[in-house]
Figure (cartoon, rainbow, N blue to C red):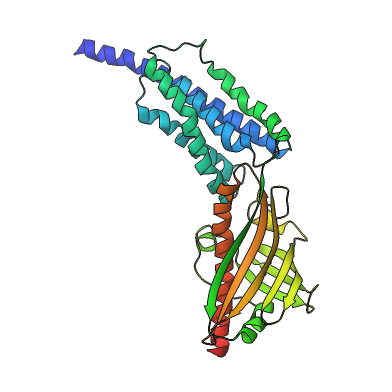
Length: 334
């Protein structure tokens, strides 16, 4: 019994010693991620580039998996938990210390997990083939340099540019003429008006407070105000009473991205919300179908993925506005 106890006492420090390389690797990976983040913040590379979304999670996950599995017989699941641990750590640091917005975190995290898994995969396969580490074949420390080199490449590679249109519709119990008047301005929106949406009810994005119209016809300006003192303008470019109104967006101050997510600027090189409008389609039974559409342009490495979030977030905003309009028309003409 004493011999067993002595063996356990000797094994405990050894197990603790085996954990230190893994802990050190995690600290080094988080330090590199923070360094890359700070370089992006000061302008070296785009905020949404290949480095942040692809190279960083893949390289750091591979590094941690390689160092952590040295002289240890990891189960397969342990390898693929590395991106989860890293993603969780970066999420906590980003939201608590760097004040990142929830939208940015939710958009980036799935990509971090995906490319982190891809980075871990070759490490796992290599470990299955060899029983001992060969540092001349795979030098893990070099992986920590890859994100910094990728920043230089990010500055030289122009991301693809694509345009997208998000549309939502609602059928109201009013004529096109009655609906037209209700769309031009929506004053004094109460907090309880509108509908439940994922973006505004769960993610807590601001809701509209009011919109007013200055002038009539092309050139008129619709001033929109949301919660948290968010303001923007819609400058009318098409005016067809009872049928259609369209506008281009103008952002006179940075209130949107300052109060929602500072990395989502609606008038930037990577995202530009361009135009929008209403279409009124009379129906045979006297009701009207109202369509609200928004067109925007993106230039990121993952436009199709980001567009899915655009469809969700902009679609939720549009659905909420249409619900407000429909409720007011129902109250006035129902």
